[in-house]
Image 1 (cartoon, rainbow, N blue to C red):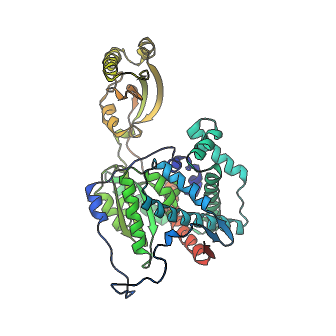
Image 2 (image 1 turned 135 degrees about the vertical axis):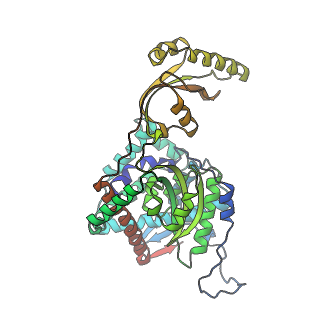
Image 3 (image 1 turned 90 degrees about the vertical axis):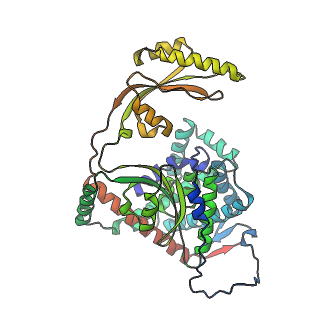
Length: 453
């Protein structure tokens, strides 16, 4: 967990508005969100109350002083801009107020993490932060960090805001590596027991899940649940799950967009396992009450344990694409598409693809290392049904151009192997580190001196 967190920051770049991952919800999700929890947990509150102070705490200026360190309104604005950009600006005014309050809480936690690392004489150098920032830029803008700078400024954020988030994550992981990891122990018996259960589960399904988790106490339960319902609404409207997980989830997986990886349901809390069992890939549900808080689950994928999955086949592909000149009418585009389709069908296998593409004025790109499950869902079954040298139907649009994928080779997966002893050991250790990290941060909050302006 610790070693991969910062390296996978690049994978979570959707939180910065560079990659969108819209998720839709089902009618069942909407029904679940309408169920309210009215338990006041023994507080003996009257049915009608008279407020004696400000009834809207969000109206105050969203700044704070954390153990003497100021979080400014600009800090909040620039971090909010990352979430807004990831959701293409589709955030209501009411949601914006809640978003600003949550971002302020995240910045407070980030500040506490950096302060705790400094107190332990853990220093993350500017060069280390710049190197990670550069990797983000290379992943999304070729070789140009300046292009990432310009993008962040164009959406109302800044390089400094993103670099501070990188600093916070790196400092926290180094602190956990020093103060938590050495004291987490997993016995050989536990690992062998896990391996035995895994082999006994051969053929059953495992689920790749994304999770957004928020802790709740009896006094904060209603507010946390309401916040989770607001997030569900934004996801239903096309919001990025990865972006919301990075900014709002209180689990350590927030740094990788909430991705839990492939898990077996019996390893999950009973409430989450029951919900995941009924989900289909691409579905998001919640909030789900579980021990200590609430979760939103997103089912990314599922597969059979220790069995070969056809979608794990590695493909060698050639993409043949045709672009339309700006201003091309629909009628002209349709005619050109028909011609393009016939010309592609006439290509005599992958060996003839380069020369044929040149003759018809099409562009061609090759990739010899594409896994079927990495393709868009609509293309996966089509690719599995193709023979070598055959192509998919054309897909795309007049604006973006049309393309086909030609299958040039396929390496089918072998029977799945059980994870190694070391891999299971690492998984169990990471789970325990995650739990201790949550307690660590909770203790930092409890001991902090925080003044709101």
